[in-house]
Length: 429
Ligand code: HAM
Image (cartoon, rainbow, N blue to C red; front, side, top):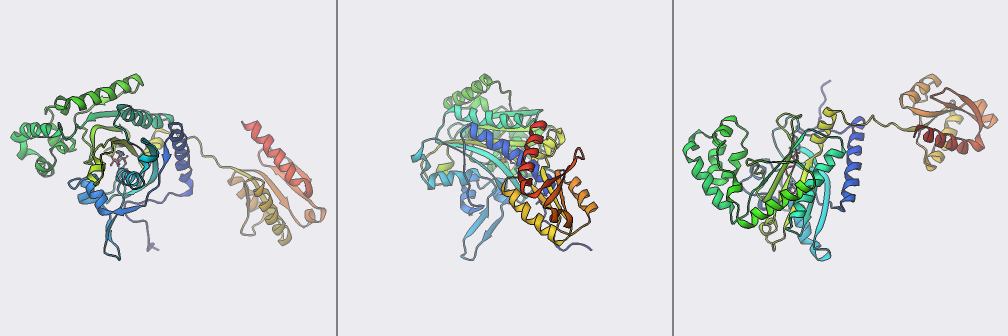
């Protein structure tokens, strides 16, 4: 029968047989965030629509086409967050975090929502991990987030990545470059795609990252923004690059890298892979020194990145860098007969309290079926108790790998198990 309900288009269930991969990545992420002294921040899944419209920019694809916006019963417009930077900055300003410590280093790991056309690696609900350093314009902050972004991927065994770097200037130098770009593109304007023709007036820099082959060919020879950076932006870009060089992080300066969000100033970067087809960006970020001003507050500089969990996990699967799944079950308790089952039920609670991972049968199946189940779950030990064992106050303890079987008196069973499991763990280590 055709199912009536399924996941909405562009969303995914993360099922038990894959969730361990998420845990694996999340654990590594939290370790690295801790090492770099980033602290976690959690913000609401929805915010006032205006926050994103102003923060990300009215002319961006995200704001114009991709936001999940709704009007609540109070008549206010809210939007499911399409990204975290605007929310994190809002929280920084709202809670005066800068007063506690001028430079805040924050990280997040959370679902985001964008109504994009779903395809491999592009979802409508996806997860990002990311960091933001708010409160400093120093190039060392830019370099630190980039180094961390790369370090995370390397430590997860991901290789074959390219770090693309650019500077998108500031309100002093970018308008100059905008004009240059418009001048240079004027002769080919009517051969650009319809979107780019619109961008020519609204946001000409975005023409540079159009994916269409004709647009790319037509823009091949345009001058890079680097030539037009003001003195301060040029110096900053130089500092970021020399810090990365010093840290041994390889990058390519890519004049086409302009990013799809309007809040960026100066540093912009992306980490791409050649393994995932067209959705090749694993991570993207940059500096956003004027985002707070767009949000109506004083100037608070910031820099950060976000990376897509689904893309990272797909990439790790492709590269085959996940360790074998760890399936840990210390003990499977088999009770035969009602009384033995209820003894097993009580015993399991006690052993779990002791820290052992225990499982029981919930269907009153035969000994054979339960043994098969224990095997399938990878149980290290099985306890078998029937009427007779209950009367004798003893249980049959079987070590699954060796097949060794012994009878253990019930009063000392917990201790005996604990010893054997510790022994087994040290033998495996
Ligand atoms: P973004 O480039 O829009 O930047 O997204 C960052 C990453 O999120 C992408 O590189 C990609 O891996 C993942 N991603 C984006 N959209 C989707 C999607 N529809 N499906 C699956 N994965 C996706 C930002 O969001 C900025 N807030 C990054 C940042 C932080 N800049 C400064 N601080």
